Length: 306
Image: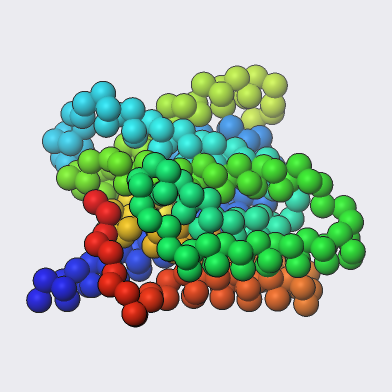
């Protein structure tokens, strides 16, 4: 019975986390559209403002009971807000200004490798061999697509990939630090605190940025609302609820859904070209996720990290 209950919790956590990461993947598409109309920090802060306005009214009573935390817990919350929200989005949006959305998805295929390394160093988790193999497949997917991209287009700046790489690093760090946080608080409350931390950190920079930029027009309202409600409020609520039910390595594997969904959305919604090499690269990324989540039945499964 206990084993069945634990398996159900794992499945529930995977579903919640998958939903959050797919919404995060859609943020790549919205971000690509938004960078044409609005500056980076104003867009980030505006989205977080909308997210707080969406979530807080439903959690006022609970927040009154859970906001009192020690210095360590608040420090972890601000690390999550600074890395997983502000720095992740700044890197992503900066890359999207100069590189295609499809390429953002491909670079994010390195997420499992980056997360596995961070989990091994910070959480002291054993890194399964299948995760390394999956990371190699993800690297092959990126290499195949990039060689084809240089041959066909030759105009994708390297700087874009460096920005996307930074986004991968900070997004992985978000989930790592969440594993170190207190899990006694309701998941949605924790998501609100992380979003609030991101808002506090981004608001001063947004105000400075606003001095030299015109006020955003109506074209920026819809992307900002989507970014706040869907890609922030719901995404981080699902992420927070799912992460605490799973081991670090599994979280890294499920995070593959971010690049997969962003690649799919870029083709369907932005009409970016789907070449044969891109199709092969996307397939390899999907195969990487399947390989990484396949358990070795000949060996006992290690207990989940707490």
